Image (tube, rainbow, N blue to C red):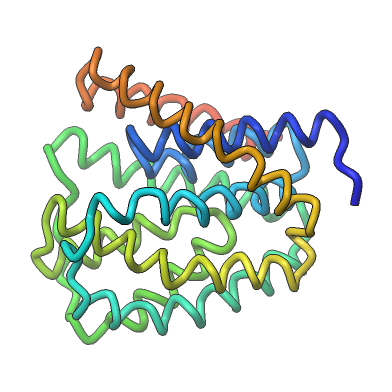
Length: 246
């Protein structure tokens, strides 16, 4: 399809936003960027273009975390994510737009509460989840990721329950996305959420993602991570409330 200037603007903003939040607070992609943008643009269109930018950004940052992941845990959740992504995409394609927006708003509020607890207590609580539940966790995370792009929070809770911390946790999440996001983007393509023109425009906007990452890094250097995260959570709550109120 031919993209309008308004749609091209969304792709540019999406690229910049993904780059910005990848270098500051990656959960904000699903908690702030997606719910904020679907207020102005069609829901499925925004979910599709954010998937393109997230797919690209994974390969840009993987070298920073090379071989620091816990492959033993990643390979437990990846098969479940495959199942969940396919199931979640099927739901996304067939669900009325009204309910997609409500699910995004509700999911954001749930994860805002989880992350808010993390900011207050100084870290996410480590739940008691058996290692063998990896496939089940992957399925849940895959469904949530396909619909709202917030599956990373589910994966984070699972990794925390296994004692994974800091750099190794981030690296394990990234290597999981490296294997999962190609299927996610392919499922979106088959489901009609992404087309060739969106892919081309998404690739062309890569420089904006780097600019967003550079600005985000500089901004974070000027303020504390906690202050920045709190501000992001407030914005996320406002966007989620807007979607639920409409």
